Length: 329
Image 1 (tube, rainbow, N blue to C red):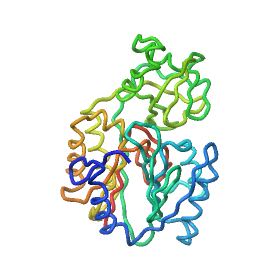
Image 2: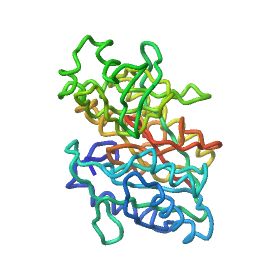
Image 3: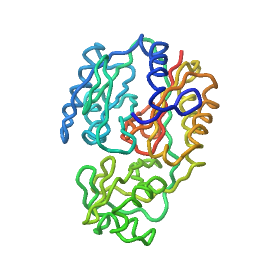
Image 4: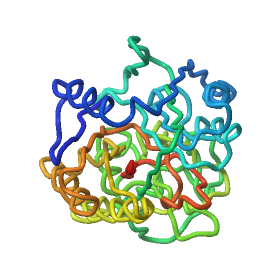
């Protein structure tokens, strides 16, 4: 993965094994059922297979489901859809492994194996209680526009125009300029937001690159007919969103005492924060409880119920979002 976070501060790869082992032994080792499957691009059936393995081991639908897919293998939205086909709208969370913006190869761990191109999943069973919090902090700007042509995670046309026009018109920058590094930089502060039907929520979609035809490759799918807008955010807004997500997770935990926190946080937020990443972690711990064991990493996409709603769940694939899973007893 990329760098992570624990105990109120960010950590680098050299520290992650030590902190992760301690967290696992203390909290998760007693309630997990693990499985692994190879990702097959453009085929969600493999993701149904891994979910079914977990269900078979648990003797039924587990109480919670954690998923750690390869962030460069397959379509994140399809991975979520494949799992939902088996487990239904149950509360599950996860984060896609990354490689620090190199976009070459990621690795996952399963038992003593180091693997790539896989989904590692964990079913949580037994007498376990948890709360989920999901917030991003981005606000829509401009007018909503309709996606008129898209294939998977490639956005071809918006309102009949090349997709890149949504940035050209807002910033007055030509497509040939945006095809280079500036689009990636712009997307950290100005990602795309996809309106969720029947709610006030937006699923964030992170543009990765634009081609010579003006099509934009995103980190997850945007279907034809979706209403999208440019989104605006900043460091302070993102930190407060992290705080709000922590507050939501604590409320969802109810009367149980927080015992551990898992945080799946988008790598784009890490780039946005620069040296201020610790402020978000501090804000989260202030809401949940200072001293609560905290472990997380910066992802290439997050999986969680849209809006953090646990009653109806409706899990989705997110970008530029902070997801918290708080275990209590």
